[in-house]
Length: 315
Ligand code: A2R
Image (tube, rainbow, N blue to C red; front, side, top):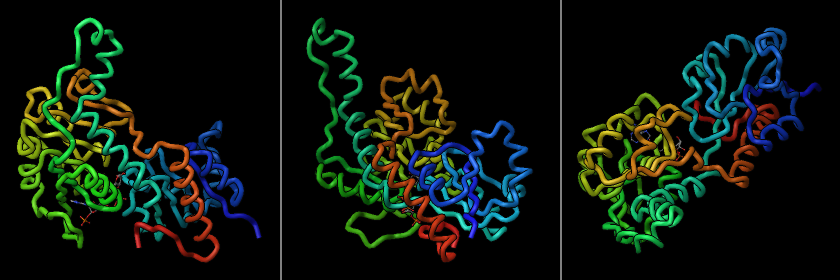
């Protein structure tokens, strides 16, 4: 039997590329001299699509792939895929949940430590010679131990963050749409949680329902000693309102791994000394990216073997 044909629009991690090469006929669209011609010539052969790296996958692409059965996404967040358009056409969409929880949770705690203890600024202080010339770096007002932490999105990653927060003797609360059977305080209202906590960590998916969920009102509720950390999606925060809140010290500081228009980070944010900024490295280690690539390939393999996706997001 011939091997199923899988299209990869942009180059993903080697584990995904090599795994697909091994098992399927892989169409490497990013290398095609004329991608449009490749789609015209081979589009009807494509049964699987390996997506990710924020490449938009929508109805316009599906129209060119009439026999597409499955879209396997590299990443747990699948906001770059039009899942409704896929579902309408009977196309299964999968993601890579679970295998990156610890990595992203570590990143969230690192951002929290960096913002609360001003570690990035303190390092710059040393590197620019100020320790030697001016003396000790000023004391920070906040300390990690015992902080009140509110998690927006207590899912797989959120729970991994909560477990870590417990070792810092933090009090953990969360806001989801639904109450969970966990030993943390549930806030049915995000605004109420923001008023009550010291730090708000965002780890909800990016979609229409979460767009700008954290706006000027939520930031004002977080207050002048409040710290915001975002490892979910940039679109969850009204970035202009955040810049304003940081400038006016409506909140104390923010630690961000995700942005509204990646990789473009507003100059105003870069210039602020109370923002710690990372280039979306939440899951960016070789072991975790390998595990994500493996799960992507396993989803495709399982689907073509017996019509069963391992981690579908649409049924
Ligand atoms: O709302 P629920 O009960 O379905 O809880 C989910 C929560 N969530 C929301 N909370 C408030 N308002 C919303 N509109 C809303 N939509 C979803 O976010 C759930 O507890 C959590 C997501 O958890 P998981 O589905 O387990 O996702 P995971 O693997 O933790 O990743 C979260 C996101 C990814 O979608 C990427 O954007 C990023 O982290 O890496």
